[in-house]
Amino acid sequence: MIGRRFPAFGLATAISICLLSLPANAADRPELALPLACDPRATCFIQNFVDLDPGPGVRDYACGAATYEGHSGVDFRVLSAASTASGVPVLAAANGVVKGRRDGVADIFMRDNKVVGGIKGRECGNGVLLDHGNGWETQYCHLKQGSISVAEGQTVTQGDRLGDVGYSGKADFAHVHFSVRHDGKVIDPFLPDAVDGACRKDSKAAGLWKPEVSAKIAYKSGEIIGAGFAGGPPSLDGLEKDHANVVPALADAPALIFYGRFINLRGGDRLRVVIDGPGGSFTEELTEPLDRNKATYMTFAGKKRTIRAWPPGRYQGRVEIVRDGAVIATRVAETTIVAP
Ligand SMILES: [Zn+2]
Figure (cartoon, rainbow, N blue to C red):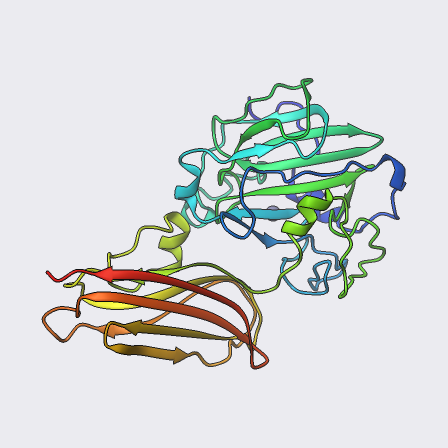
């Protein structure tokens, strides 16, 4: 069923109601669980927050820029489209009743979708809308085609499966777009009392999240979502499709590189890649400062093979985000090269 009684699902609507409401009555607020089954900062990451800036600029709740113009929800991403193959459940964030649902929209990255206007009015893709009472609603977008497992009017309990994470509708990476509304107005679940687009740099508040969830998804700007060895440079687009699909780092590989995948980097950030091989230092590189913020990014360092084979043994790679001279994130990985 496409578009059957599915209110307020258009992106245009979402943008027009970007102005945030006055603080909602604290007593009747839902306490939210994570809207998908994943391990935050290992198998899922927050790619975008709500845009609190009512004007043309962007501002997330912690006064950063991990959002985009008019973004009306929180994007919980998984590592790649391939991650969704086995089914990552999207879960009811609170008890409620299914107010709307849509299925039947194909999982295709926007940039691969050549049909102009093909998703007009269906930007949310396959989705579910829940009514939690007292004017509170949550919405879940970009679910996998054919995965919606609830019917309109059905009562759901917090944690119930609604469907699976996908990339239907207006999506360029596999994720669930989760939005919260009160009396039809967008609420930032991290800062529900935000007034007139004010953010909070020191925000430690739990927002609407259950305390144990809040602790796992505390604000971070600049994250390493993946790192590893490869026998040739991966592409950022290729990794969005399958994060494991890289040229294997074998003894006869044309190159030996270590790469890192990043989200929400800031202009000025530098990235360091270090590889230590069986004989000691193999390579080390520090990039120039980024010229602007990067929502997603990939970098790598390594060498092209000019010898018969890479020396066998254990290799260790490390990537770092360097901000204002300090390392703010690190990720290491190892591989063993076996003699051919
Ligand atoms: Zn979104």
